[in-house]
Length: 306
Image (cartoon, rainbow, N blue to C red; front, top):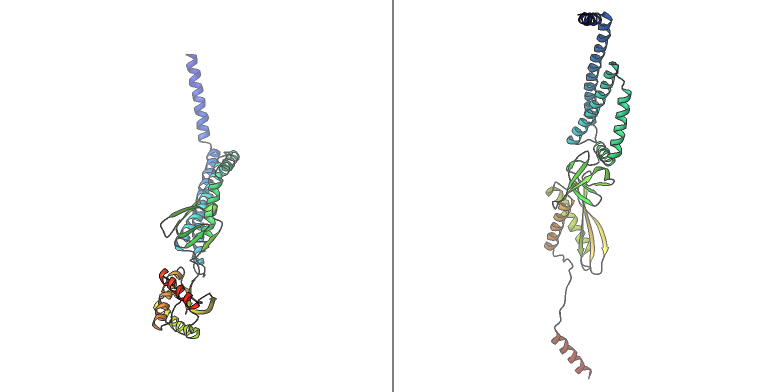
């Protein structure tokens, strides 16, 4: 009976202590300040994220007014990437501040995160290298999807750009997948106009001035036929004096990657014009002599000599 009374007294005492704490104004003020601080941290974090995202969007919107622009796909990728980095950074700082407000020691958490990040960094060096390389490829606008590039020994059209890999499609159908961290040298053929180069072979008996005049008159009509030509093609002059031919060089500035097509069309048009003006193009001739004819000629020579 005495033990039950003691238990009841102990329970009543604990209940009174709990009620005293529960009704303690200082306790409610303390936790109220903590809750208010957490709410303020969350509100400020949300405002910072929204303002930061809007600022990133405005920066790229202003950039669209300058001559050097990003492609739309690359611009959207870069905006999304920067906005995600901003969001994760702000959330991480907010979580640390909330834990600190709850009187939780964040020093150990930060130290553990640092050690974990260091371990991941050492274990995934190539991955980090590829991601950083991909970021700078996108940020510096080195090339974009649809560009024709040469990277090392690989050449083709850029099919896809990721943060870790870049895919290049060759004109024969091969798809090359390259790690961004291994991309050190890039030749981009799509940024500037190309030049079509055509060499014309003439015989030494041809009237050089007449042929140059014919070709120049023909070249003046080419920009009207082909919108890929920029300006009027020109005859540079004699490029080479060969053993049996003179080489004239013709060049034409074209839109990016259109030089091969225009070069073929120029060769065709020039050949047709030379044929129409009866200008002969040199070609190899093979003279075949039969054995009987050769013996008869030698026999006839011996009789005359005798």
